Image 1 (tube, rainbow, N blue to C red):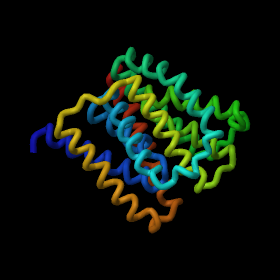
Image 2 (spheres, rainbow, N blue to C red; image 1 turned 60 degrees about the vertical axis):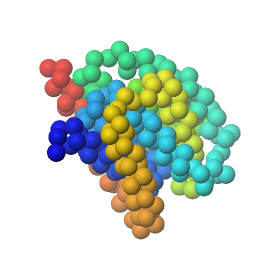
Image 3 (cartoon, one colour; image 1 turned 135 degrees about the vertical axis):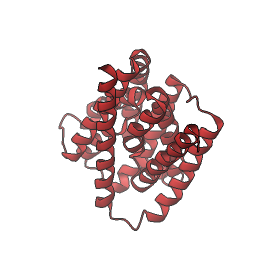
Image 4 (spheres, helix red, strand yellow; image 1 turned 90 degrees about the vertical axis):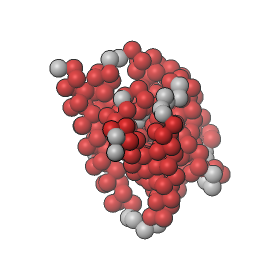
Length: 244
């Protein structure tokens, strides 16, 4: 197999794992896939591919749960994200690749650490908290492809149940990724790379749906965090090496 063929196979595998996780939990594609994608196809293309894939998976996932979306609660998050996405895109476009790679690693690692610590932030409540979470999430999503953790922290502090969290996470994922793709553009991939990514999304969706009711949520959560932390640290190390 050629190097290009190996890279495309790896790309499809990364998307498959990320898609499986997102179908199982409503979020998590970016935390799983972004650190690996930026290592395989570079920070710029890895981020925009993650934006496209996460948005597409969220659209499919919301098809059956859209009635549970809390539009009133989500509006401040989405509006704030729309305002900060261009800033994240502007910053990412001007950073050297090793710096951007290290930045992605830092953001993923910090986000995982915060989620693992079960942090509760009293400021992330009410409309003001929604605006803050949306603003940070929009910037992070367009700059590094990882916009979910601020939303997660907001939902935790709001006391949302899993039933409330998942459809609203999917709605937020659609909106923030649409904004990010509009700001960053579509990924520039070969036809076979696109085919591998699409195949990974379809296979990941099927796997996620099959195992959604069979795997304890706590096991899934631990796996997501372990993989995301490993990927974030790997991207950080490679970025620092590139700057050396």
